[in-house]
Length: 521
Image (tube, rainbow, N blue to C red; front, side, top):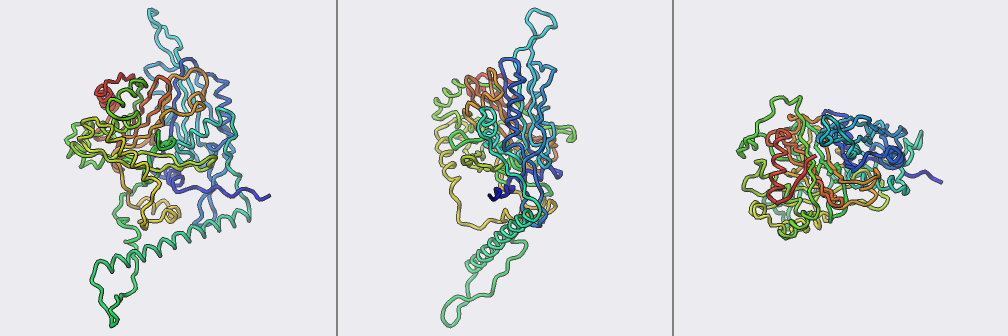
């Protein structure tokens, strides 16, 4: 019986992996479960063992043949489970969650995910200085290179329900591995060659259409052979900033076009990049936020807030929409409130999962895009947003008959020094990833009574300078579990949303505009 074929890194996997190796900040997806009681250590050990048996527990085997894609292989490492003995005050859950998101991961070496938990305490009323356990908090972080939101949810559900895991095939060895790598390199090169031919034909057609064609005696158009220059193959490559294409968050989590989703961070890789514009544009909006002076010590502010699920649904219906379209409009209005696009339309990226059953891919998210006019946002017309989002989702499966500016196969074959100089992709001002109501296995993964679930993508250690160069932006995830809808927002915009207080005020003011009580973590 022949062994399963090698599971190669897809383009998005490769771009996220490069962020761990280079100067750019790594993209990490995080899931947070807030419990009504203390965490269950035995349940979490069982969950960790289940995750370690599946698709998240993988590492990279680098190719020895130039041009071939790297391969995924089983991690071969012990699962990381941090059951903390120090309890967390209930008003410091957000700080604890951010600390867990900052712990480094190394998908190349098989340290691709981490599970941590702590009890939550609150002061006892009437007892001076005493506190009691009132709940628990569980964090799962996972490198975006290893899983987008849909892959993360699938892996957690399988582990929590003891379903059959998706197993990453063991790496080939010796001659078989070399032959497999050589075949993959040849296939990658053939794809690039086909693209080059198509690009040359396209350039020829455009040149013939742009200028009067001399005619021969037969009256037919004639012309010289067309050569495609390096500048045409890589437009603006020389002028591009020396940073990697940033992929968003997606973590990607998940789902189908109804609740939308993608750690994610996020493309996916190139496609989901989030931007709020340049620093000069920030000045033109009239924003009064001060630019952080200490880039080295600055970190992107993050906020999780709980909202009543029933009230969210009521508010959405009152404005002609659904909880999903309310979420999209909420984030777009936050962009306006931050000082971006005053009186102008707001473009929003909507991650959509495209995973099949038993799909072993790490990243499979695509991006729908919707641009919402300022008057629609001012009127909170969710009917318009709903119709526009529906059209955007339908367009995700359609491709225009055009030649890509640069073939993804070629980019994946290039070294980091070259990839870092490629032009940035089209960007949006915000990324809104709605998980809706996740599967029961995902919601109840840590056991016990789950009060709320939050999901968010992070850029570990991203400085103000890096995010400013990449364009900034707002990333938000929305998850509904029972009575709680949890909205999680990361502000990757150091010029308009420079600190946690600013983000807190923006989000709570917007919730108040919708008459929604919000409880921050």
